[in-house]
Length: 453
Image 1 (cartoon, helix red, strand yellow):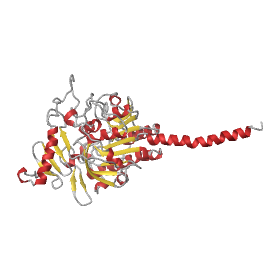
Image 2 (image 1 turned 90 degrees about the horizontal axis):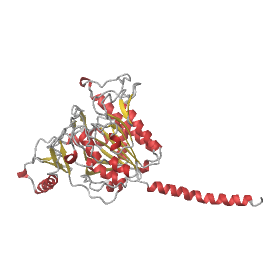
Image 3 (image 1 turned 180 degrees about the vertical axis):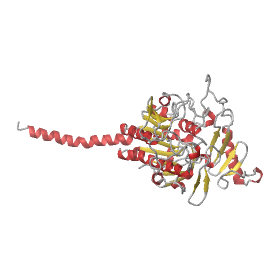
Image 4 (image 1 turned 135 degrees about the vertical axis):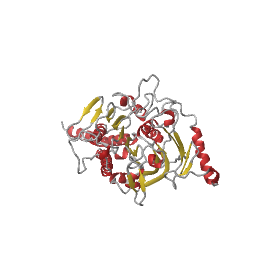
């Protein structure tokens, strides 16, 4: 027995030697793991609503800090209204080629959920759906879990809401607030999948009308069960709702911090379209911006765009590269090492190299096709950061004419503008025959669900 202590000491010495090696192996595996992905998209909140973008009317301290700690884009563009933006952001394809009608995502579509799920990610969507498909729809489009409003019905979305959670309709009646419910679900999903990798897609319910009190408003009523009528809309409530957007983003990112996974999590924040048309917003320089939701000028589709990835993105960057919603799918897929299916033709371009600080060739222009209710024809333009050319031939200097009141005469353009116009015309021509969906119904479909949102 005299040799036992000696053998024990030897074993312990070997274990002490192995533990650092094991820890190093685990750390290396985590370092080599593709990043967690969080995509947050607010609803009806234009570029001017963020303090970081010069907004003076709204309190967005956390979003401003998220921008300061990462990369803020000055030239990001959505579609002019929600369903077109949802279809484009999820598929990476121009509405010209795959948009059927309002309130529908073509059941034949492939989304970033489908592609990234196949790459081994756990996936979740929480927030607002508005794309039909029934209780199985989110699963079909690549999401393992969901907590959604406006999936199979349209109850109240704010106080005492009704949502669908993983195949079940759930109604809340104890003063709960819809945005908190879906945010908490997303945070719970991240906690349960903290070992990653995961994709968390959060198309927010806020701050879409009706503009009602939030739980932080003085006139919050936890017993309210209806959405307010139009004559009770107010800008102060919209301001409260924008502040609550900031609060919900803080809750999501704080959960990431608490889980200790911030440096391996890519976070994107944007919005689906411009601010509601009845809202005027001031910038710090005194400029007044009239909300332009549903319209083709800047106020309808110029949106906030923040990317934060601690340890990867150098803080404090303000980028002038132009970004389109179709660029998000290829960017997320490249970050996830997820293979784009053979035969899937995307219109977007990955900007992941820009985020990583490696060689990057920016877009020269973007293209937009828009018709709220689908059909054979729509409005079209191609643009760069400053100039915009419509299919009709109208050409604008957006920097000097945001409301597009004074088209530039083709006969009076200088050489520089002639070159720019010709380049934008090439972009339009590339999509000349892209629109093949001529009906607002799918083959064999008997009726449509085309209610206004």
